[in-house]
Length: 366
Image (cartoon, rainbow, N blue to C red; front, top):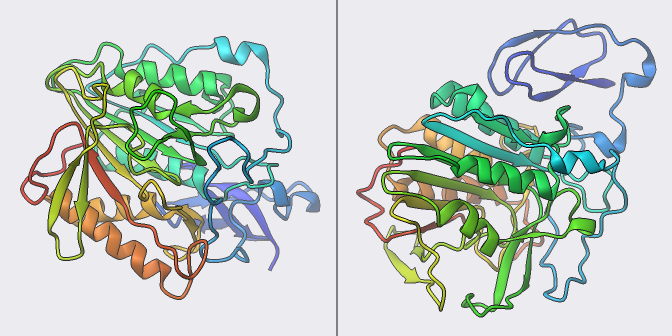
């Protein structure tokens, strides 16, 4: 059946609508969107480079495998569909703050050899969840994707850096901050000796080929180190090699029975806060890959993002231990019979923190 691309009028999610349909129900927020008739048949089908929603995609397409420390890897962007403009890097996010604020970044890398399909959907789903379910003011949520028309919201390296600085600027006791990233991740050789495994983790902006990646060292110094007492930061990181993505001092190891222990990741440099509390909930361990999946709803989404939102929506008074174990179970169910980068690979969500705590007693508070 021929389909055309449209957006939910309420939450902004991309939807594949049958040609001739007058209305469609959003699979995320369940609202009804009135559809305008297509102007001509050339808009009826998704162009391959921009197609996020086509039903014939495999149920669990894998993100690229590990990138080599020397920078030679399989993820080599070909060209950008949207030209980079010098003034983009000079624009700053709006001076809007609140007790709850968030930066959400989703990059599909359209036109690249290793493009993704669900990252923009992840960012839009997270915005809807934070605003509609957790009470985040819409003006205090910055979304950076390739679909955004405002130039400062295009996910370049400079714009992501600027948004991260905005996230923590002027924060004070009682503030709740969220950084969500869905896109490509990579490992590079650690140059300053502060990584146990000898590799820094990094995110790949849309212009990473020319401007470079953003290392976990920089992310830590920008949004973790400045946190004052009483401020809580949650990093929700849906990318490969993301176990220690925020470079937090303590990594929690949890087995299927719920037993846990904290591993001290501190080497040489202090990577904690200035009195605040930081948590990172990431898609997989540092040596694992993460994936997009249509297994949950038929719409491409990151397995970590979907399982995180669903768990928090379905359960109240949730502890961090219950959150991680429930997410692990959801992802494990989605992987059965589908595989992730190969039949023998897996994806296990990880929890790290600026300080150790009892994961079965502490409640999630965002």
